[in-house]
Image 1 (cartoon, rainbow over the protein chains, first blue to last red):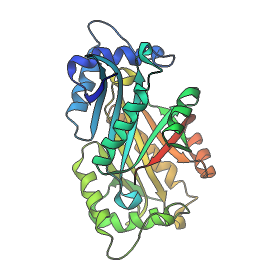
Image 2 (tube, rainbow over the protein chains, first blue to last red):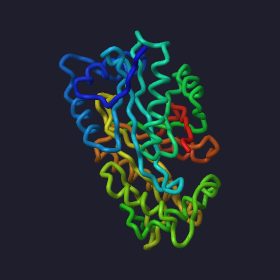
Image 3 (spheres, rainbow over the protein chains, first blue to last red):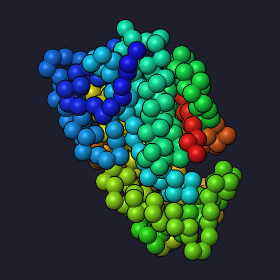
Length: 152
Length: 152
């Protein structure tokens, strides 16, 4: 299995939104359609224009089969140590169980280290019980409570 | 009580680091000294240069008595909705119990809405039991698990 990881291009966006929508939580909040709603394209362009955000894809035999977003945050705390945040981690349902998600996370951890981050953080919905073990196996500690407030 | 909220300036940095260090977790990881370690100044300049990060202070009668960091993250998920993240929330120990932290968060929630964010998120260490109630009172839901991985 030859999977590569790279920065997403605009032509990957449809595959990314499809994976985000194909999910028990994502199906309630995403809108996968052709053409894609313009808000997705605007968001892609905003991420591309921001040096501290990277939209990553996993590509297997020319097909996009995984995605996540890496955010690098300069921070005063931890003696001025940069934080890496990972969001919106997905692997195509048809390609799960092959270790693609794990490889994508390990690649992203190395990427965050290259960018000078001293810690990586993420939140995972309490209902995603399989995800907790996935991240624990990568060395993540469930030390925090993740709290959310809707602003709309 | 006339408290104002504003973007931090470099001259506020010492007061900010003092508050971060004056904390049962922060005391283990910060270094409040005169002069400040250079890494704090570098981090301040990185935050200032990043349009998607804001270091906020609460000022009471000319004195800095509170701080937090707001990060705006462009995102594909939630139909391209921007996320607001709040980190490193502190109120000077001598000024707690007066509602300054609550006012600072309400100000920041409005700021995040102005910046187009559709959700605000934060993680709080499981040992900060008083903080959980503070955020719950502001409407936050403890829907997620916050996981961390040290990269150093």
